[in-house]
Amino acid sequence: MSAPCRNLPGMTTEVTRDGSAPERAWPVREISLKLRDYIARLNRVWIEGQVVQISRRSGSQVYLTVRDVDTDVSVAVVIAAALDRAMSPPLAEGQRVLLHVQCEFWMKGGRLVLRAGEVRPVGIGELLATLERRKQQLAAEGLFAPGLKRRLPLLPRRVGLITGVNAQAMHDVITNARTRWPGVVFEVREGPVQGAQAVSTVIGALRELDAAPEVDVIVIARGGGSLEDLLPFSDEALVRAVAAARTPVVSAIGHEQDSPILDLVADLRASTPTDAGKRVVPDWSEESRRVSEGRTRLDRTILLRLGQAQTWLEQVRSRPSLAEPGGMLPRLDAEVGQARARMFRVMDQRLVAADREVAHLRARARALSPLATLDRGYAVAVGPDGQLVHAADQLSIGDSVRVRVATGHFAADVTDVASTS
Image (tube, rainbow, N blue to C red; front, side):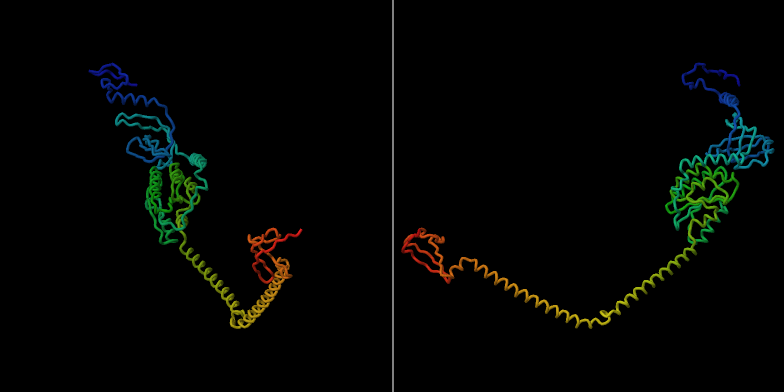
């Protein structure tokens, strides 16, 4: 370590509580020395990352930019040129590596760099184990659940396509889709699909297309490549962005044997970009054939129904009632006449019976009536008070009474009253 900061002219050794008094300001070289010495004491550590930039300048050192595999955080790494030349195969951009580094602070420029004394390319086994752990974690969160998969529209208004710049995958998707449906419209977003910028570029394009209301389906396509080349499509941030998208997403990465994690979260996995072009739109010739077959079946059904209706109509028309409607009138007229005759006979019979019943009842009523007694010579007297006279003592000499006989009535004056015992 360097010697403690010496006092400069005019400086005071008084220490304030927050240590920020201008009288105690250090020269830049002093703080730089202390930082360099402090950082030099840190232990060496192993780090893992992806090489995104290599600068092989003439000299004894090679400068690397190494990015975190899941974020955009990057650091500067320096290795000896001899170490770089000794690697087989040589380091390449996009490669994942393990680095045994020591932190250094470069006073000139005030930069913090990592000096690597050992570089190990990450093997396929380590990559597969990392991807498997990530896959299990995302599966446990339910991002791959079948219930989250959305159906692709039968005929999308516009197809979003995310692919490499002028890539063969883009031509495969568009050519095969337009072969099947010539009128399909594409909204293409080109950008890097490999290396450090791939993940952020694809996520940005995905969000832009997902926000466009006219885009009904999004295809993410890339041709084949090594496991390292396809790592961006197993990136956790990209996988979560696809899971959050509202628009159905088709994954068309690599070849049939390639299976990045994107395939699991996408709404549909296409085995290749060519297959994606066939899956997002229907086949015009096939649909035309289906329409033609449907029309044929419809015409056949209509003709069959018409034939059945014609046969039924002919059968109905052949019946006597419809073949000669006038021939039924005489028979019906005779039936109506017979029915009227029966009705009149029944009515006459019922009237005669009712007349007999009335006469019988009238006779019984007369037999039971008190007036029938008058026919035998008796009379009914009504006193001046309007009451029937039952006894002589109800009247007095000179009273006027009304007497009813069988065939009428008359008035009489009482001239004598005699009671009988």
